[in-house]
Image (cartoon, rainbow, N blue to C red; front, side, top):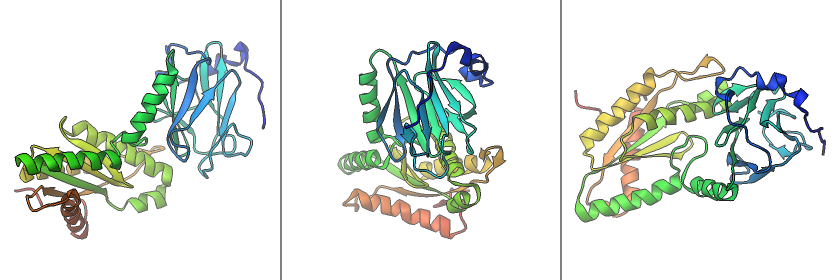
Length: 306
């Protein structure tokens, strides 16, 4: 495995003068207690310790962290520990290195930073109780999708059972919205999977920002999302779905400065006493989603009242 010499202070004048505003005035963390935890990718949940030696992340066989991903360069980036902190440095990679969604050439890392290399995402964790932070992150990965920050399908299934049981017992209204990105395969084919991942992350961020506090927003799978809405009548859920559809249609999605047109379709259903299993509730919403997509996409079924 290729080894690199430990950087000296003279190596850093150019690094610390980065253009990324978020990298300025960051409290420096030492390398004695720092880890990368993969929160999205093939090594999900794996921890990579950062010691006193540089670490290469890339596709090459001799990389310290090897990623078998065509969108990753052979020596994509380096993690450089030094007395002033830990620096992430891009190695003129083809697709760039991102920290918290921002393309960077060099960046001092701070606790909680999300580092994206190709389609893999790492979370940088450091501090006095790194073991506790690591286990908290692993617990979070059991319920949360690392790419979008939405709850995952496992969490959705558990929450759905609880809410349906509550509905059947107390007959309190319950609604479900199923959302699908229109023509998402075309996004991946035309702009690439990295662009597709960015669309998923940005879409989720937008929808999370406008959901109600009591709603549960989940990534159901692929390009599908769900919104579980307790104490909500069908008409109110349809209005909420239409607001989401409209906001997505008006939002600007882009990757590497290129605009990507995005719309969504949504199917809405309300819980009924006849449903014996939670899956029947999902099937009812999914049927409406199919009607929206079959009816031309970029629409909500049932449609909102005029």
